[in-house]
Length: 173
Image 1 (cartoon, rainbow, N blue to C red):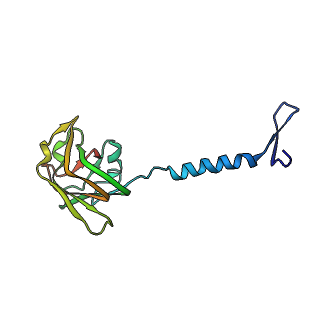
Image 2 (cartoon, helix red, strand yellow):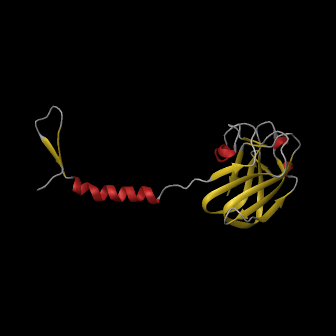
Image 3 (tube, one colour):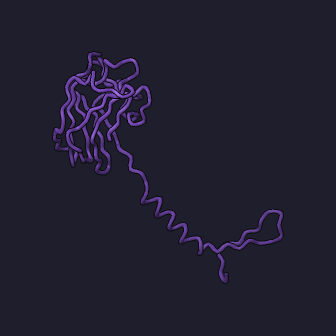
């Protein structure tokens, strides 16, 4: 090491540790590149309304109570829109009603897809999903064909009878 960049004397020692940071730079550069190229892309989610500031749709993917609550007596259609920030493949939609309030979950919905978040195409419609197939209280809706989309919208045209629409969880797989 003819030209080391750093010297370090360990506390309580008379010896000096010499570090050649030039040898560490390629390792650091490789690690930084891995971090930058392997970052996870998180979707953004919005709803047309929410009851209060802390009852938005942001926690739907986390399946965390209390979940999303629409405004009281919402004007239909209400929608939940998602930008995946990349194309995602979806074959089924799973909805988890709010604990003890299944009458608040969506009843009639349309699933829409877009490549630009401006022009939407209806790809599926589900009516009377209040009693749809359940798995651990999840309402599971299967699409006829695999959907590949960046922008996803669930348009809600009615709920199961309550003055609010609520959901605790949403899975798209």
